[in-house]
Amino acid sequence: ATVLAQKMIEEAFSELERNTFKANDLKRGMDKASRFVVEELNKVKKEVTTREGIEQVATISSLDPEVGKLIAEAMEEVGNDGVITVEEGQSIGIEKEVVQGMRFDKGFVSSYMVTNTERMEAVWDDPYILITDKKVSSVQEVLPLLEKIAQGGKKELVLIADDVEGEALTTFVLNKLRGTFNVLAV
Image 1: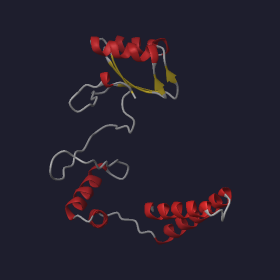
Image 2: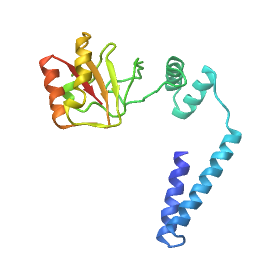
Image 3: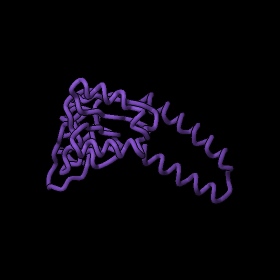
Image 4: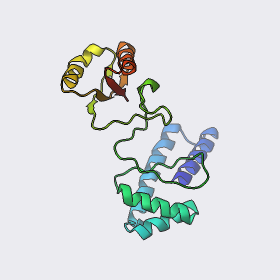
């Protein structure tokens, strides 16, 4: 799909440079073509459901039987809804690490919020989680919740927000450094 999309984009730019098409007409044509291609691919696709089938596809895609086997193992462990991330490592060889819990593409707002500075990660057991589509810029916005959590004996909150900034961010970092309350803002 990536190779096909790249070729379509290259050809589209060539046509635009030659003034063969208007940009809007070209976009409509590409949209129509992509819908057609997806429909045709859906007609001929074959679901791969067995471990052996997954290993075969992964081996062909990576050109490496060891990588294919590892990907099949990882898929078996995380399931169809799990996430597999491939990263270049510092050591020689291929390794697999299964992480339980949640992982975000966008990291924490401040590096002061980590619990392990060597791995630059924050790991807590059973924290409270607050999800909002708002920006949090003042502690007053979440103070009643923080007080309620603290009264229950907990000191950890994962705050998933549109953004955390200003006085709220400063207060969260200071509380973490003092050890009074930990907020991981994502």
